[in-house]
Structures are given as C-alpha cells and as structure tokens.
Amino acid sequence: MAAEIHSRPQSSRPVLLNKIEGHQDAVNAAILIPKEDGVITVSEDRTIRVWLKRDSGQYWPSIYHTVSSPCSCLSYHHESKRVFVGQDNGAVVEFHIAEDFNKMNHVKTYPAHQNRVSDIIFSLESEWVVSTGHDKCVSWMCTQSGTMLGRHYFTSWASCLQYDKDTQHAFVGDYAGQITLLKLERQTYSTITTLKGHEGSIGALCWDPVQRLLFSGASDHSVIMWDIGGQKGRTLLLQGHHERVQAVRYLQLTRQLISCSSDGGITVWNMDTPREEAPQWLDSDSCQKCEQPFFWNLKQMWDSKTLGLRQHHCRKCGKAVCGKCSSKRSTYPIMGFEFQVRVCEDCYLTIKDEDRTAQATFHEGKHNIAHMDMDPSRGLMVTCGSDRVVKIWDMTQVVGCSIATGFSPR
Image 1 (cartoon, one colour):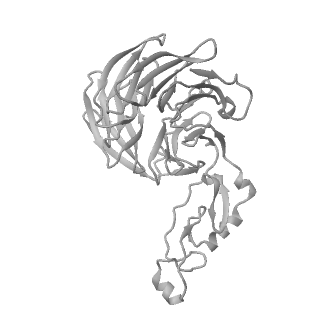
Image 2 (cartoon, one colour):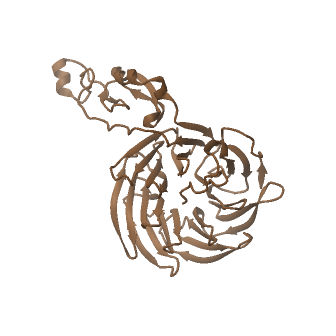
Image 3 (cartoon, rainbow, N blue to C red):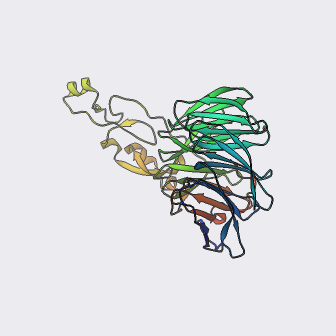
C-alpha cells in the first residue's frame, strides 16, 4: 500500500518520506492527522480511507469506507474527530472517527448542493459546515439540526473557500476568476466586496487571520496576496509557476508561502522581505516610448503613412509599448516576477544585479498536485492528485521547524 522512501536526510529541498498507493482513481484531498502518523484521503473511487503508519514504516488503511458517490473534498476537525466529506452528487456527509482511528461512524448527511461539492469547512465555534459547489453557490448548514441556514448564488461555479471563524466572513473563489467576501449570519448574509485580479479560475485560497492576509492561486499560473487587514487595497502578484496553481498555504511565523501547481511544481516564497506592487497597465493608442501608433489607431496610421504595431506592456512601469521598445527580458522578484518578463529599455537599465536575486525556491513534486496539506509542527507536507498517489514530504529544511502555530488551517 505504501513505501518508505527516506529517513530525513539533511537537504535544502523537500524530501519524499513515504508514497501511498492503492486508490483506483484520482485522490482529491489528503489531510495529515495532527500528532499521529496518519493521513485521511478521499477519492473519485468513492472511498474514504484513514492510513496509519505501521512499525514497518509503511502506511496501511485502518479505515476503508465506501460511499454512494465520488468524494470531491474533505474537512477534518481533530479535537472532535469529526470528518466532513463533500461528494459529486452535492451531499456533504459527516462521520465520527474513533479515538484509535480504527472505526468511523456515520453521523449526518447534509443536502448542501445540487451538484458537485468543491470545498468544505467545518466551524466548531458556530457549529456550521460551510461549503461551495458546482451549482454556483455557497451554503452554510447547522450541524446540530442538519438544517440549511443560508445560501448565496454566483454567476459561475464556486471553486474554493476560506472562512474566518471569529468574524464569520467567508471568502469564495469562482471559475470566473473572482473572489467574493461574504458576512454570514443565521438565515441571512451580506456581500462585502468582490476581489478581481486573476485572469483565470480560482483554484485555491488560504486565509491568515493573524495578519489578515488572503492568498489565492489560479489557472493563470499566478498567486496573489490580498492585504485585507490593511484596508488600502494593496495586492502583491507572485508569478513562479508554469501551470495552474491548485494549493496555497501560508506559514505565519516564518512568513513563507507554499504554492503547488498541477504540473507538480512546489514553490516556497519568502514573504518576509520588502515587495512592491506590480503597476496597473496603462492604456494608450500609441507607444508611450517611440509614439508609433498601435494597429487600431487608424487616424495616426493614415496621417503618418505607417503600419500599426502590436501593443505590449512593461511589467515594471506598466507603460504601453511596442515590441521594439520592450525587447528586453528580466526577472524582478521584488514585484513577484521570478521568471523573466517583458520590460522596456529604460526600466531594464534601472534593474541591478541584486534586484534579480530570487525571493522564492522551486522544487519538483514529480506528480500532479491537486491538493496539499501541511503540519508545520512536524515539518510535514502531504500532496495528492490525479495520478492516484499520495506523497508525504519532510519540509523542515525548506521552511524550518518549530512552527506549530504558523499555519492557517482549512
């Protein structure tokens, strides 16, 4: 079922400790059990499994439970041993796990959605289970009575969710690339604001209630940090992936962000460093450097008897420029550009060698990563995806140890 790979050698990269195999279809979520050598997984093969590490060093399922519909997402509350599983048929199923993790009993089934459940969070404080689904809505239900408390609809699939248990605010990402902030109440709600910045569907969210920062990853290969607490609309764009970002986690004490993408890329961002906001792209009918017309500027093209040029933008200053005036490429990590991007000739000359020093490290998970969870107190990370494999990683040499309170849990 599982193979032991390494026994934690010293390294500056993630070390693969174990690989769990045995699922018959994609593994949609995997969560590390705190203070235990265990993992809970849910899969498209309709199974919920609890894996415990044996004396042999391998993980074997102590619980193997099959449900009626493929399992799409998972929420686990360790203190109460309550498990909530979202399904493809729109239902959310609650289970209770025994103290020895060898038995799991069904508690309730919640008719939360009319289509696939995309994300789910349980709040013990309010006794609510909040979920999003492909029926384009977020719903919140009472776990004591099992009744629906409220529901809000969007114009596109709701894809991911974060919840602030203290203020009862919910952040909902959708397939249109927007993040909606809602204030949830019993029987009612209010829409606070909508965050727009991504050019693709939102794949993952992470909320840090201490610094009041929201992190979002999307199919446009980028991560955005939204400074909600600052109340000034400050955002930081982070570009360090080649494929869609499907998992993000922020480690508050070490000021590091971990993001994972569908091609197996694992990026660790240093957020404890001064950063600049990327500029807004400017609009112009002609190049703001050489003043040559762009191809839609018919009047200037006719007057100057020249062909129109294609418009580009300098990533450092935001000016609208032609290809000739923006032929240079450079990294600029202080703005989040860890890969080379287009810059104009003037900005290229202002970038010093020290400005190109990377503010992130890049690693390979070597499998599709659809979901990631982390236990900072032990420096462990678990990843899973469509290849049916669950991988457990030692991250202590990458993000440091003794950071038990530095993780904003789902």
